[in-house]
Image 1: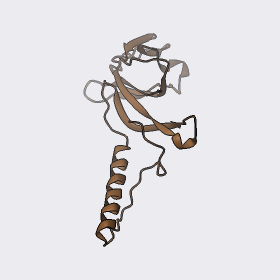
Image 2 (image 1 turned 135 degrees about the vertical axis):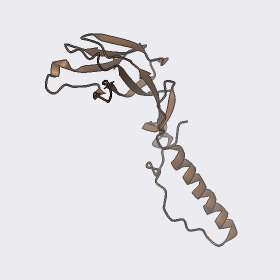
Image 3 (image 1 turned 180 degrees about the vertical axis):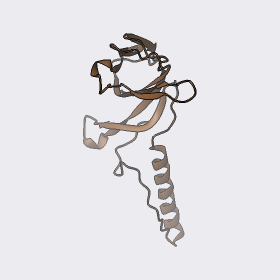
Image 4 (image 1 turned 135 degrees about the horizontal axis):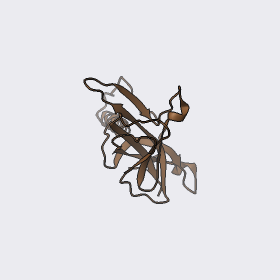
Length: 174
């Protein structure tokens, strides 16, 4: 679902609508308002975080056609959530991400979080990747390759973080 370059990239709608009295103009203006509403709704980010490839509703920097900038189209952003389980103890864990990629894929963002659930209440939550500001060498790095999400801890034991998720957002060039 590639969208055209829009003169209203934020897709904000007016809060007041003025409809003309003339029946033909009324139909034209109402149709335009309905089209504007559909565009605004369809071009908002979707809050669906699942393990299958999902269209996010985000539009990425436009790619331009060969002939003119009027051929500019935004590129669709897709998302996959990967359950990466328990963080490693001074090593690297790998979890398949399930994205079938080729040379036309570009990563837009990689982010996530890990939870140390504690015994009766949440003990600690950290973002992924994580930089330990007290001991920077005890940080957690995240990267992906063609098949896996790789989480690496250097010298610290992060195995108390038994729940972790990594979100990968990417575009597919055509």
